[in-house]
Length: 195
Image (cartoon, rainbow, N blue to C red; front, side, top):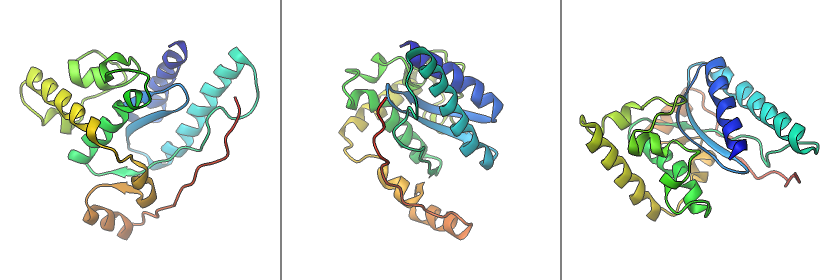
């Protein structure tokens, strides 16, 4: 709990510093997922690197040890708006449930789920246009979001396929990205690092 609180505070400060807008997130015990609007492309890689270094320094100061804290480098892909943004948000908010850390997504404090599903305050987040578009009525929108996320519990495929192709969206979206210079770099798991 304490570590995720520190991670949450660091994330807030880095969002401000690097001009990111956090849309969805989950902070797990050994990794995290973020969906960010990033207005300055160069800020993503540098910002994530510094965020990871800052958290690692905090953790190492408290517990000792040396070296990297996270197993792999960060991975990213471009998400088409609309349903794809909501689907990726749902996937990461169900991560604690799939990992056995919570029975239901609302039971896990360190995610964006309660912000969307129940309207809980979260200074880190801003509602996405896609979420607002679910309904004009706030209570109805929250109910629809809860139902949407619960429907996602049946989804077995992970988001790994999007890393391989470099985007999440319609094939024509991906084709346009590639025409504009997106280079899909395959990823592989790095060596396990002892903490």
